[in-house]
Length: 298
Image (cartoon, rainbow, N blue to C red; front, side, top):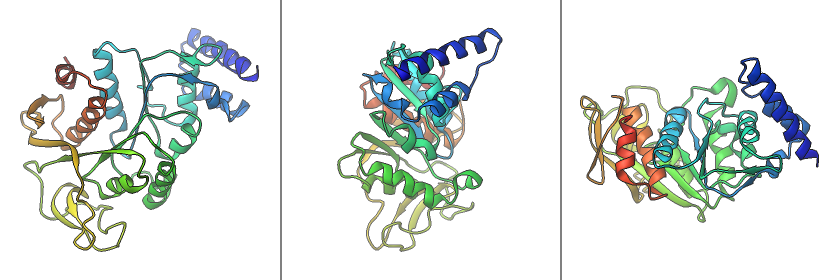
């Protein structure tokens, strides 16, 4: 009964905030979480839950996944506003659930702050996790990149769902070895016209995370993102699920499995984000025509 009344109180609060023109953001979820830190257990979810984590690109990738599913006629719940900590996600779920905690949807897609992944999914079942990249952009909040990676790696030790990984980031690809029971899917991009033989920006992926040998790169797309391999233990040699070819930023196009995708943006970052989104929705047999149309914003 406690959770019933928490949900009721928060729904009344959210309604009041809406009347006065306030969205509320994390506030409703923060109040609910302070009242019961086990409240995530109360939700009854019977649809796939998809989560996107990574330093850069979470919002674009999550929105792309959401839009593809919506354009396929699915009922989707997603934190498109970007409230990606546990309190923001809790606010969203409370807004969309019944007083008994039942959440009605075909899919739930969430961008999740990397540090809060173990918190949110301690009691919620996660069907698919996509990890985009790791950079040093948020050291003031998350600490060293290695600390963050190890936190996610620890979470993955008991994870048995789909794991979609950016094969071109050595700190992401390593997570594919965290748990043999997870179903791992890598996406990889062939070099685009501005790819280089030498790193021109500061990057994290210099050494093999397993044997500590310096990695050898065939090319860099940007920073430490590119095609790499460990000369000692062969780390970086994995089966690719979605291969991106023929990247043409001038035309804003690329190919996956001979399908041409035209996107609204002309950056290599966007190509990687859409490759991640396409990898995810392909696991759910979404029509390629829907994916192509959505990618271009039609």
